[in-house]
Length: 373
View 1: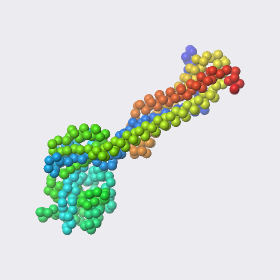
View 2: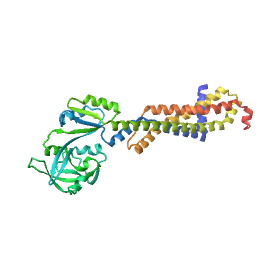
View 3: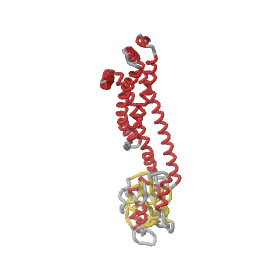
View 4: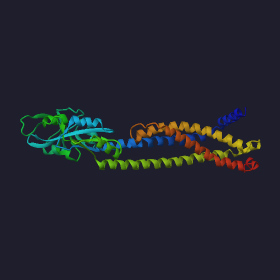
């Protein structure tokens, strides 16, 4: 009977409090939402930032140990056994003639070119995404100027010692400030046909996810006496340093926001408790013990703050999705720890914020409180 009466009193107090309950609920809701959002974002920050950094080019190079060529099928088998392989590309080089002009041809996979060489700028035209395109080539801007080659021109490509020529069309003129500016870039299949190097390449490169130690272990496992897999230390270490700094910054921002949110919640709850001092005095005057009052107010705050924190924690996941789209252009994964942490911290802050105002009200003279002193 006593328990039912206590529950009824607490329930009616919450319902009838109106603005007071809304203020506590809103403060806790916002605090829990912000905390849960940043916990979810922080948990995904490593994979998201790593993915962004991988967009800046290859961090692994593959070269032949003996001779000048790598068997293409053997390399494909190696790639299949590599963990966290994001993308890869293969290259074959050879000297060709473009009429009166000689040039270096680079055979490659067009479909991976933009990922492996993100700074390759298309000056004119567009790059084919078809790896077996044997009718079109790309021309480096410097070579185009030297040989007076324009977009859409038809070229006749040949190699010394052979009478056979291959007619191709200039699909795009490209620039990246590197060796590619002086090359003819063709599909790997076309370059192998022209250079008579079927099934082999000169070297390859790739983008692998993970830290430098994980990548190094993977490369040691797939390397053999014929093929060397090496991590580009400068790129991988730079990516790792940037990632650590971003994680540290994110952690500091999360801590600062948590402190600010906690202070705001504590201030709001303290003001609510101070405004209830007369109510506390009246309860004491009616015969309620200090223990009864602490239990009554504590349970009321616990119920309101728990509901606010729980809804705020799920709202934080929605906020994390918005932040994920703004920062990374992708969604953020759900972490159960974000719900647990947001609810625990929010409820703890709510109870801590109400402790001193309740203690202060209980220590004052009842008559003075009722008179508003």
